Image (cartoon, rainbow, N blue to C red; front, side, top):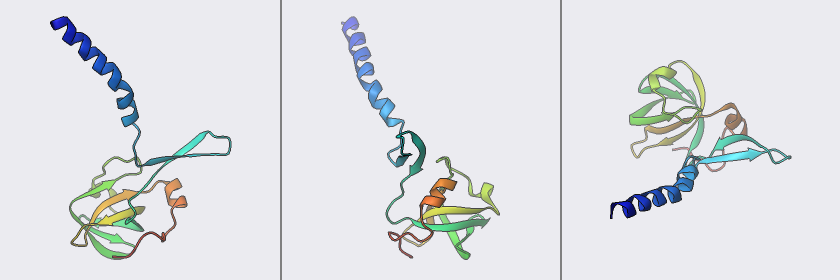
Length: 132
């Protein structure tokens, strides 16, 4: 009957609401707390192969990574400090602390612009990263 289906749909929606709320928090984000237990700042976690560096976009796709000429791959994703995608042309001339991943051809494919807190917490040459 139609009434039974509506009730079932409402019940399914009500059981899914907590799951949707949990999906709002990113699995790649850690929340740091101070000694009082209050959350102070959210810090992203990065893949183990991510390398820390300094990026300057010269003329997309040409970039300088740690003062060496490099290139963004076709379809490269640059995530800003707020986690949203950023166009490389909007970053021309800015000196940015970043975490990067390379693709199989050696070009930069994933770039995360670090916040001030992340830049202070992540060392300039992390022990878990390697040079390609």
